Image 1 (cartoon, helix red, strand yellow):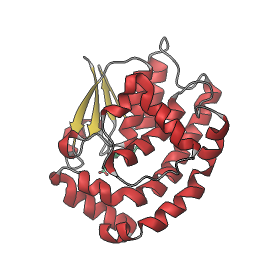
Image 2 (image 1 turned 90 degrees about the horizontal axis):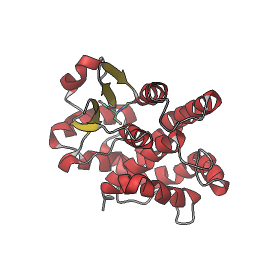
Image 3 (image 1 turned 90 degrees about the vertical axis):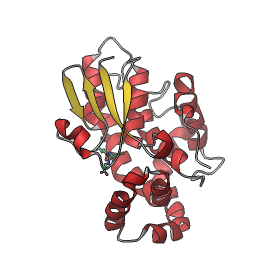
Image 4 (image 1 turned 30 degrees about the vertical axis):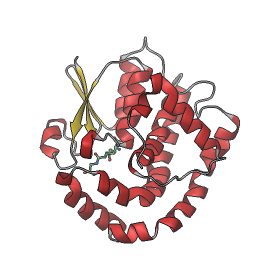
Length: 229
Ligand SMILES: N[C@@H](CCC(=O)N[C@@H](CS)C(=O)NCC(=O)O)C(=O)O
C-alpha cells in the first residue's frame, strides 16, 4: 500500500484525533485504502520530513500533504473518478466555510469540555507535554478546567445552533448524502465520544440522530473505536 496517514494515537492505540477522523472518513468515501500509522504528540521527529508539527500528514506515493483541508482538496483533485467531496467549486467554497467554522468555533467550544478527559486517555509519554501546552493555552490547570465543565457544556448550546438548525431539516450537512462537510464536523463529535464519558448532546437534538447515522457509514467504520465510559 502506498498511502499512509500519520494519525494521533493515545493509550491502548486509541485513535481520537478530530482532524485525523475527517481524513479517515474522507478516504473511505473515495474507497482509497490507506495505512493509518500511530503517532504521538511528542514524536515531532517522525513527521519532521513533512515540515509539519501536527497531524494528519498524508504520504501518497511521492506526494506529502500536510493539514486536513489541504489533504481533502488534494484527494478531490487527484482522484477525479471517485465520489466527490464537494460536488463542484461552489460546494468546495461552502465546505471551506464549514471547515473554518469547525476549527474556529466548534473545536474551541468542545475542547474546553473534554480536555481533561483527553489527558487521561493519552499515552503516558505525551501527558506532560499535553498538560503544559493546554494549561498555557487555557490559563487554567486541567483540574480547574474539569471543575468548570458544567459551565462549558452550557455554553456549547449556542455554538451548536447552526448545526442543530440545518440537521433539523436535512439528513446530512451536505444534503441528500454525506460528504466532506459531514466528515469534518463529525470528527469533532467522534473526538468527544472516544475520550469522554460525558454526553454533550441532548437526547432529542437532531445532532444525536445525525451522529448515529455517521457512526453507521462505511460498515460502521467510526464505531470500530468504542465510546469512552
Ligand atoms: N489545521 C490542522 C490542525 C492539525 C492539528 O492541530 N492536529 C492536532 C491533532 S488533532 C495535532 O497534531 N496536534 C499536535 C500538538 O498539539 O502538538 C489540520 O486541519 O490538519
